Each structure stands twice: as structure tokens, then as C-alpha cells.
Image (tube, rainbow, N blue to C red; front, side, top):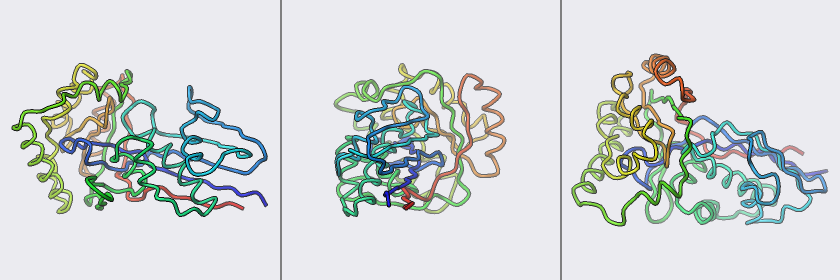
Length: 284
């Protein structure tokens, strides 16, 4: 009987304000990858512009563990490409997880995903779910705060990760570094306590968002309106341009409505902070 696997992987939002390259959260938009033994290599995807051959990122990640010859790949994704919501990390994690499960390899998935993606935060959140802290060694996962939800607004102009990386200087003023360490600490304490006052204070950043403002001016404009719109706060998601509005669950509906009114140029969606990471199902 032909082997068949379906992998579901969440989107992810990296940096979370002050946690540049160190913090990330899984969100309830998903990429689903179905891999089946059919005797020939084929790739299907419901996202326009995605390669439909061996250069597809899901296939490349799969082939980091096992050849893809004779396999069909079917990809369905709710994650906007080039939006800063971990679409490439989800594709990498999906391909690796499918190969690992299908051929019972017990591979070091985080280490491999980190190598393929180039930085650890998005892939850690995609693999583990919840909120992750990345430093030396294995990432550490914590549960999302009770009652925490989000709204994402994705402006229409994409931002490449390369451009966002190039906008960062090689050195930063020590005052900015100290500010971010302090506020990342407040954020993690607020998340651990489900204290939304601390979470709101802890989302402040002086390291990356302002230094990239020319790449996503609409994102910065929305970021500055977060409190006015009723959110606890907001952060630019990864390299942008998506903005994640952090909400107590009672606020989420009002924030969603306000954004749909004031940000009609953006794709606006309600999301939850997803507790589950990559999930693989065997269908035989």
C-alpha cells in the first residue's frame, strides 16, 4: 500500500517586539502538506507563484532527508507569502516532518530546519507551537498567556527578508540594547503571569522596527495606532509587513472591526496564539 502523510504546520510571528531573532509565537494560520507515493514526482500548490518542481521549498526540505522521486506533493496554505508570518519556515518544517515521519528517520528536525532557514525563531515556533525563546542550544517553549488572542493586518506591499536584514546596522547603541533586554524580560514575565499590563509594556522595541520603517511605512502607521484601536499593543511580524495586534479575548472583536474599517487596504484576520506545532498524520 502506498505511504501517505499529511503535515499541518502553523504560521509564526518572530521578534515579538523586543525579542529580535530570539522570540517567536505560533499563530492559527496553517500550511498543510500532503505527500503520497504515486510513482512520479509532482507538486501542486494553491498559492500563486510558488515553484511546482524540485525547487519548491517543501520539496527541498524533504530532500534534505530523503529523495523525493516517486512522490506527489500537494500544498495548501493560509499563510501569506512574503508577509513576515513564517511562510518559508512552515514550508521547511512541513517538508522535514513529512520525510522524517514517512521514512521513520528520527532526524534532528530543529537543527536541520535552523540550518535551512538561517535563523531559529520561526522554525522553532512552527515545530513546537506556543511561544518560544531561542538562544544557544534547544529552544524553550512556554504556553501562550490565558485569554491572549491576536489580529493580523497585512499591508499590500511585501518586504523581502534580505532587505529587512540589510536595514539593520552591524552595531547598536548600548542604550537600545539595554532597553530591549528590559522589555523582553517584561514581556516574558507578563506572558507567564497572563498579566496584560506587563505584556503591553513589554512589546516596546528600539532595535529593529524603527530602523526598517522605510521598508514598511504603512506597518509603522498601524503600529502607532494599536492602543487607539483597543489592542494591548502591536508588533511588526518578523521582517514585515504584517502587524500583529495583541489583544485580550474580550477586545479582539472590536479591534478586528476597527482595523477592517481603518485599514481597508490590508488583509485583516483574527488569529489565536496556537499551542500546537507541526502535526503529522499517516494515511495508508
